[in-house]
Amino acid sequence: MDIKGSVALVTGGGNGIGEAVVKHLAKQGAKVAVVDMAQKNIDRVVKDIQEMGGEAIGIQANVTSEADTARYIKGTIEAFGQLNIAVSCAGIIRDGTMLSLDKETGQVSKKLDLAKWQAVIDTNLTGTFLCMRDAAEAMVNGGWEGLLVPISSVNKVGQVGQLNYSSAKVADALMPKIIVGEFLMRGIRNIRCVAVAPGYTATPMLTGMNQDALKAILEDVHLGRLVAPEEIASLIGYCVENQALNATTIEITGGLCYPKGIAK
Amino acid sequence: MPTLIYNDMTFTVAPRGDRWDISYALPNGSSALAGAGLFAGLAETEAAARAMALIKTIFPVGIKSVGPDVTHPNTIGDLKIVGPDVTHPNFIYWNKDSVSCPRQL
Image 1 (tube, chains in turn green, red):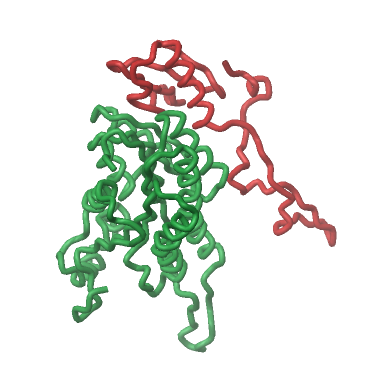
Image 2 (cartoon, rainbow over the protein chains, first blue to last red):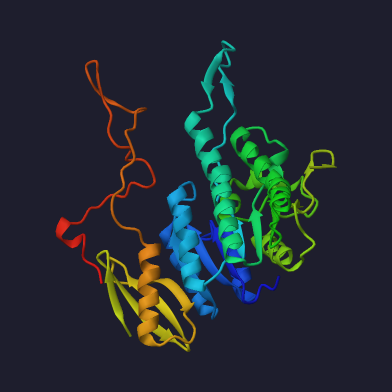
């Protein structure tokens, strides 16, 4: 599929990886819908795209809401007449171990809050599901060529302190296999699904963290630096253009390894 | 350059080449873009109509209460009082006077 002339929507498009995806696709000639919770971020990104000479709309939405999902899909189609690419970048972290023990008694002193679990599952898994489902519905009913891109994470392998996040991201990584299998079963041939699983990426969340902790993380990355959001955006652009990429999850980590050199 | 008022917000539809930008006024007096480079080749009246339809979709208005929220009852003694779930994302607070509520083009 050609990026030029296509219509893309990106949840979490107001910053980080989502912003890079929006700008990459707009630079290549796609019309883009920037979907985000933060109106201020939406306004900034839409303004940037205007200055690039691109076409964009901004839609403030909560990706966990079915009504908001329907609204941002409808808004995208009203503005641009079709939908071809849906990238689900919106995500949050609420880290914590499932149990914490009191050092003196050895008894459980704290459990992972249900609220922390639910917020991450709602945003990172249900939000992705709603985006993929409703984007696919529009693509099928419109008869448009389409690509669905759930954003997973290299921590889908299981990261301590991220039971909620890893559980959501491994499910996101599984989506392409199931969705494309169902498409084949139902005779839907115009839509592909490719998930992308980034490693540690230079988003404000990571670059702003404790620099010693960041240095420790980078010791396990073969590339020796964080992955740039633009590199992930470029991979997604490639996924759009290469029709043979389908029903799979692609990792982009810079060579993230466990300590002692086994690749994650 | 059409000006549209919807939900107590003022939008302007301005030409940029053969396309249209939709901006809206912010409370601090500045403006932000709701859309850029839209409706290629459309005349002003058609662009304004398309813009209004898009604005109505992008900026939701009104109140939808979802409930009762049985998990968070208010209690008076043993009596449990369940109300609408105001934390639901579909619940939108309307903080304007009721007279301005139906005002739209």
